[in-house]
Length: 218
Image: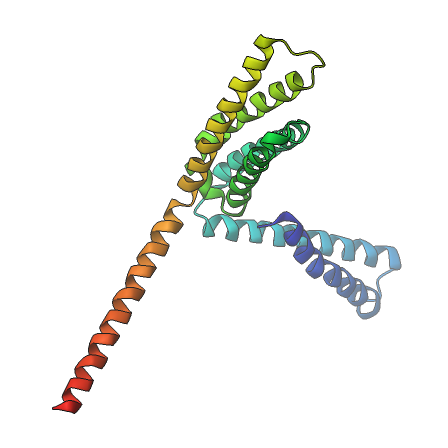
């Protein structure tokens, strides 16, 4: 679950609970102001923590993950987020106009894979090659290319290196596309299945309608 949304929901429940406990303690039980405030704050904190634990437990159960798996995945996603920031900085720091479309596409695919995995952490295992290999490669190459392309003087060897890097990055772009496809392959299979079911249903309805019309003609 989105941590910001989770925080808002917990706060939305915990704040009223704090106020209610303070009012009950102070007016119903005639407790001193400071003691009522202490009870109220404790109630708010406990409510906030309990809701956080409850929501996380539900989230893990929904996605069939253990707490250890979730922490492992989130640790890697946190590292991936930093790498994607580096990738963004490296890609858009290059002044090569001819490769703008390629750079935008690479960044778009990387962010898409990250966002899907954040939303459904279980999919992380389908994208391990992206997180442990391909993302590192494209970041390193993009940073190196960005550095070399900004050099004021370029000899033939440097130009060859830049051209080779562009080709390699282009190949990595295709690899990232394959990573994304692998990540959503189950959704594609499910969609195709639903399409087949819908086509079969439409065909059956047409056949039934045709049979009814023939019976009326007879």
